[in-house]
Length: 66
Image 1 (cartoon, rainbow, N blue to C red):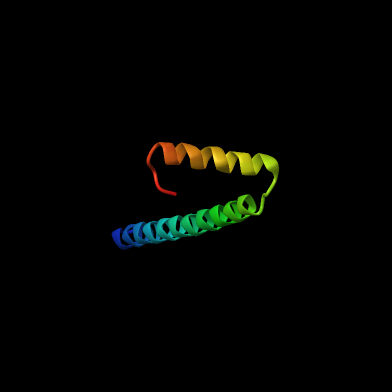
Image 2 (cartoon, one colour; image 1 turned 90 degrees about the vertical axis):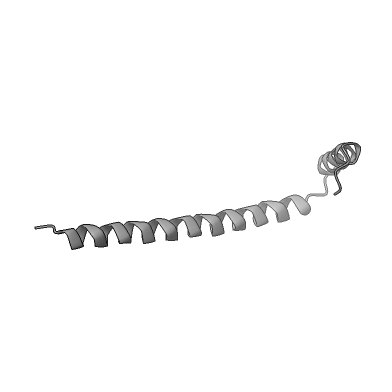
């Protein structure tokens, strides 16, 4: 039979598991961002260079520092 202590322990376990899942998701998202950033930084195609220039010009025109 399930008692109050079992329910309490299950709740604590759920909170811990949720916290661990969130922390893992954050780490995974950071790694994915770094991978994408590095992939974009290594792209020196004409299209990538044009996109960087257009964005830099737009940010400069908007008064946003790079």
